[in-house]
Image (cartoon, rainbow, N blue to C red):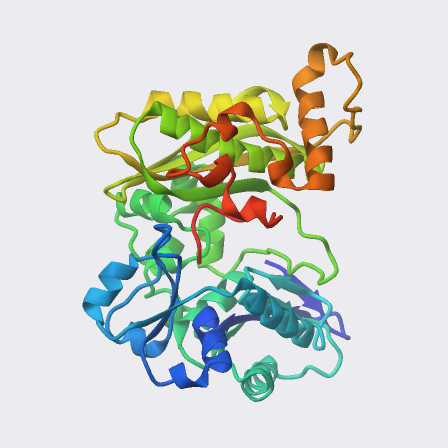
Length: 429
């Protein structure tokens, strides 16, 4: 376990806070639009472009059973009077930065976990005293200075601190200590534990582990045999013995993957439609790999059919790459192997993972005819340069020019046309 030494050399538990904003996107919208405070409100995608899912909802909408990530049309069936407004990510990032600056006034160890969550490590910070008092002070300041609410978990463990912030909402502090963690944490579903995703939860349920307590009291040796080293890590987390550090607030977060996804304007009906979409996605992903001077060793695809059921598949590359052509062809091969065409395709995504630094950031001239064996990379570099100077639509691949505008306009995804290049996963919050 990770502990620190006091003045007399006595081992002391860490003082970890996890701060989680309540209904963050919806709460920001209620600050900006006070008229929506007392009505069922949701932040949603663009229904006309078939990005119609609930990204966040306020407590009035939650009372109708509306859930994050469900389709807007389903939410309206539950609550006909639901107000749905489009996401304003610039505003959310503004408030996220304000919150981060506030947390950094307490400690230099502040680690974001998305735009609305942060860990704070108060261990050894002079004058802190009772971390529960600091948690209550942060909740008060968030409420009074930014007119938002948050829940805070306080614990000796990073994992338990996050469990605490989820335990009681809204606007509450939960302290999970050495004395009470068995009573608070252990009865919770094992899926509430950080790093226990859907696949891991199902695997644990096969051996009758359904609560965190059941995981904690299982033999670590058995878990290692059953799940490998990850089983032991989960056992340590369930017992509060994980030693994950809270990152320094000035540390640049390691980039582990670059990806993008889209729901097309209409369903993809054949391989031609899929190929056009894959090229548009690969064009974005590869461009951002080169921008950040990374190459990928593995390519993943994510596919969702018109029935909203989906799957992920990945392939390890023979040689690392940042080339559009290689990423697109790998993604298409994965799709052909794993998709049966029993239904049209509604949405898909591509992610480049296992990133390694590029060998070189060199860029070839547009008029350099000697492309040699690395011609594809040189062509991509030239395309990057032209787009940087004249915009994304100034040069496109032939497949993008011929792309069906009813599928993807101009063969270029909307985010890229506006120069937006934020790294995001396959699913929105």
